[in-house]
Length: 163
Ligand code: HEC
Ligand code: HEC
Image (cartoon, rainbow, N blue to C red; front, side, top):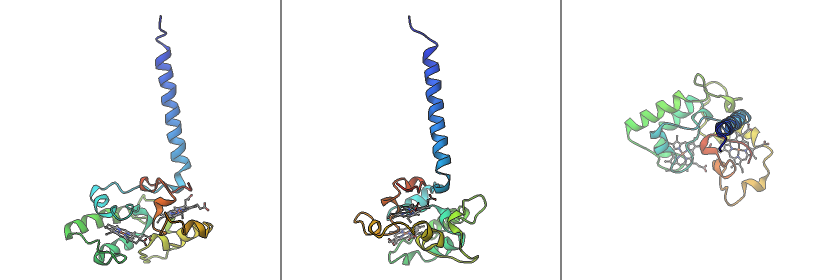
């Protein structure tokens, strides 16, 4: 005869184990987690050449400035029609690092009003990568500092841990 009590118990234990694992990950990753872009339009237009960089990695003024000059975007033309530009700007500004409730940890050291276009030139980003050896940056699969995914495999999901 089967033991009916055993199965639910095992499943319950497994569910608890998985929950603890997920919680552990969320907590361990707190410092290096930046909510990924969830807006489908922004993903569609801003994740074809590189990952959709988390909105909280720049202040609102940076996004407004960048979205105002998309036809000359780091040497590329990334322009989209006016409605799309407006909608993406709204999303990025609402989720910027200096917007309410967003993690602003990468903006430390910026002065109010600063509107840098590069995450990779933020004082805090530079400091976080101070000790990454030169040989890492010159790896063939890296190519550019902006190629976060080469070193942070879960970057598109918002995780920037060292792996
Ligand atoms: C046609 C290709 C293309 C599209 C589309 C595009 N980008 Fe870029 N983006 C680039 C290039 C090229 C760079 C410079 C990358 C480098 O330095 O290696 C860049 C760099 C960036 C950077 C700075 C990265 C750093 O160095 O910190 C940000 C932020 C950025 N893009 C945001 C966006 C946003 C927002 C959109 C959507 C509106 C977008 N990009 C769409 C090509 C594109
Ligand atoms: C050449 C590899 C490399 C690239 C490319 C790279 N990183 Fe990193 N990053 C690292 C390493 C290694 C660390 C850990 C440094 C340490 O702990 O001393 C790190 C740390 C970080 C941290 C701090 C995480 C924490 O624990 O608080 C953030 C945030 C981060 N990177 C974001 C980015 C972003 C955004 C990009 C792309 C625009 C990027 N990185 C590109 C290697 C890289």
